[in-house]
Length: 160
Image 1: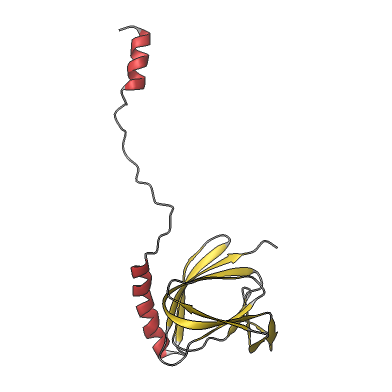
Image 2 (image 1 turned 90 degrees about the horizontal axis):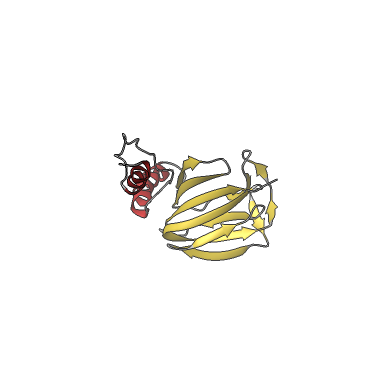
């Protein structure tokens, strides 16, 4: 066989595969049933405490994800450097937001917890809703009666 024929055959006929190296999937995937199963555990933890429980699912370089369960009103929170995206998985609550906060107290380097919100806006949120809360906007979840709310959170760090 001449050199040209060998070259054409090598291009047309694939070579035998070498040993396969398993690739780790770089995608993080949390199906709703899995999140709700984890939320069942958070519900038990909340019953032993103040009516709320959350867990950080994963931290990335400029954002992190959380799962939260509430059966009672939350405290007022304000993220100065993070946009907060909420996806309500189950239940319902009233989301109170506003720019004016009274009695601010720094909680950690990520957020400030406050006593109350002035000039507030109230929005009923329920399963399937997505909420974008920009940095600097105080928020509070109000959960009335026997209601509960479970939500997935993505906190995205804003550039300085």
